[in-house]
Length: 173
Image 1 (cartoon, rainbow, N blue to C red):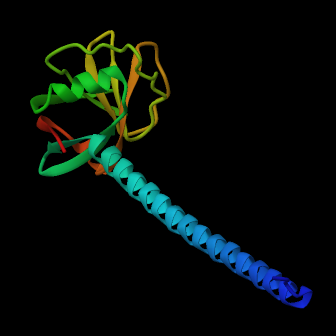
Image 2: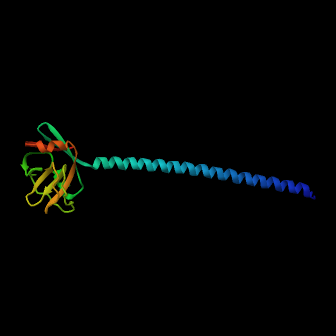
Image 3: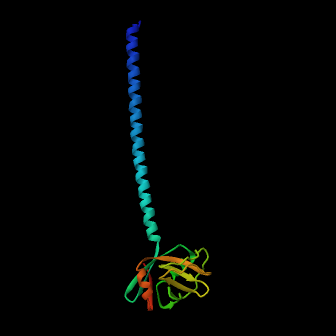
């Protein structure tokens, strides 16, 4: 049996068209799967960012200082002294005036200042003065001093520091 050349060309064209159609179909399918994978990866990435953000919020060390029916909130840094102070809470202590820009109190145990930033105190700074072992709440600018380490900064109620007196309660938030 002999194949007519015109008939042979028709089969070739049909096979080529079928091949091109299959390639286009496979390419579209792969592209759709890639889009689905990208969307899935994007959603997973967003979920991980939300979870990380929530964990960071949970890990923030915040304390409240209650004095004279007013509340001041501080956020502590991640220095060793701040962590040790946080672990001593809750506390009920007497607060004292010192100079004309700060209130001080003494935690039950001295704090280790390893890996704790040196303070450049301004209004709202919570610091630890290692030579005396006292915690300092600044209500005015002070600057730095040898042995003064930053524990954190005021988040809210900083205007109450100046009027603190007597016994104060310090708790974890």
